[in-house]
Length: 247
Length: 247
DNA sequence: TTTATTTATTTTGTATACAATTCATATGTA
DNA sequence: TACATATGAATTGTATACAAAATAAATAAA
Image: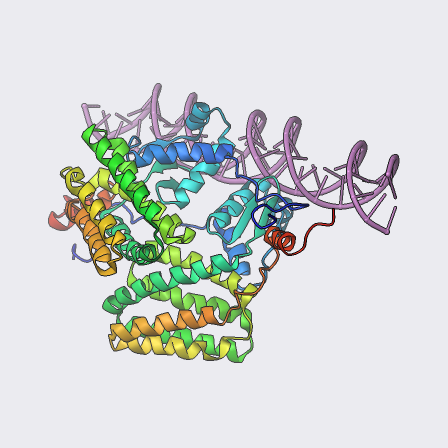
C-alpha cells in the first residue's frame, strides 16, 4: 500500500503555481494579440493599461517587458511599448525557425505520442473545424496555434515548447500583416494529415507534411511587396537616388 | 555621386542603440554567470545588487526578470531570485534543443559563410587556445560560447541567435553542476573541424561534427546520479517506499 | 498658408515609501 | 535535547512621487 500512497511524514508535492497578477494580465494581452484583436503598431500606454486592469504602472511595466522579450511587443526607449510589426525579413526568419524546430518536434513527438495524445489532437482539430464553420476566425487562429503547441508538449521539451509558443504568437502578427487570401480552408486537413502520419509512426511523412504545412503558410504571405510603413527611411533614400535635389 | 552618398534632406540612419542602465547591468550579471563566477543557487538579493551597481531596486528587478525569462535565473515568488540550478532533465532538454538548432544553423551557415567569416572563426579558435594554454578557464568558457554564437550570426537568423544565446548560457550552468573531468582538451580541435567542414562546404560532415561535438559534451556530464538537492521530495518519497514508518 | 520655435501637456524612467510575506532568532513546552 | 510556537528583522510586491524625455499645442516668422 505504501507503494501507491506514501504514508507518513512526506513533504507536499511542489505547490500549485497560483497565477499572479502579472501572469493574469500577461495572458490577457498575449491572447488579445494572438487572436488579432490588438493590431500591430498599437500603442500600449502604461497608464491606460494600468487603469484597465486596475493596477499601477509598476506591474504593467513588468508585463510589457515580458511581452517584449517574447518579441510580440516592441519597446522604444522613452517612447513607449507597441504591438510588434514584424518586417518581411523577420517574418521569413520566424517561419524558417518554425520549420527547424517543428521538424525536430515531429521526430520527438512520433516516438513519445500515446493513443490518448492522438485522441486529444483529433478533438482539437474538431474544435478548429467547428470555429471555422462558425466563422469565428479569431478563436480559430488561437486554436490552430494550440494544435502546434500540443505537439511540442507531446515531444516533451519545455524549452522547445516555450520557443514555439513565441514563434506562434509572432506568426499571428505576421499573418495579420502579410496574409493575402484566407488560408483557413485547407489548414484543418493538413492538421489531420499530421495526426495521420503521427498515429502510423511514419516519421518521414510526418516531417514532410509539417514542413509543407509551414511552407504553404509562408508562401501565402506577400513578403516581397513594400514594407508596411516602418522603413520610410529606405523609401526617402530611394527617392533621393532617383531625383536630384532642387538646390 | 548621389548613388553612393545620399545628398539632401535624407533622414539619418536608425540611431545607434546606446546601452541603457538595464542593458549594462544585465550584461554584467549575464557574463558573470556565463564565466561561472556566479554559482548555481546563489541568491541575487535586490537590495544588494542595487547597492553594488548604484541603482534602485526598480531597475534591478527589471534585470532579474529579464534573466529569469532567459532561464538562467529562477524567481521564486516572495522569496527572491537565484542563479538557476538546471535539473538533469532540463540539462538533457537544453542539449537536445542545441543539437536541433545548431544543426539547422550549420546548414544555413554553410550557404552563407564568406572567406572573412572563416578567418574570423579561425581567429576566435586561436584566442580560445590561448586562454586554454593560459589556464584561464573562465574566459575560455565564454569564448567557446562566442564561437557557437558566431556561427548563428553567420547563419543570419537573429531569432535563432537569440535562442542559442540562451541555450549556451544555460549550458554553462549545466557544466558547472554536472561536468566530471575537464573537457577543455579536445574542444578546440572540434571547433577547428567545424571550420574545416564549413570552408569545404561539406554540409553532411559539418552537421555530423557539430552533433558529435554536442553529444560529446552531454556524455561528459553525469546526469544519472542523484539530483543536486532540489527534489528531496522525491528522495523522501522513495524512502517511505522502502522502509515502513515507525508508528 | 507654410514652416520654425516656444510653451504646455503627456508619458516614460527611476527612486522611494509602505504593505505583505518570508526568514531568522528567541522563547516556551514536552 | 528535540520540537513547536511566537516575536522581530529582513526582503519582496506594489503604489506613488518626482525627474527627464517626448509629444502635442500654440505662437511667431517667412
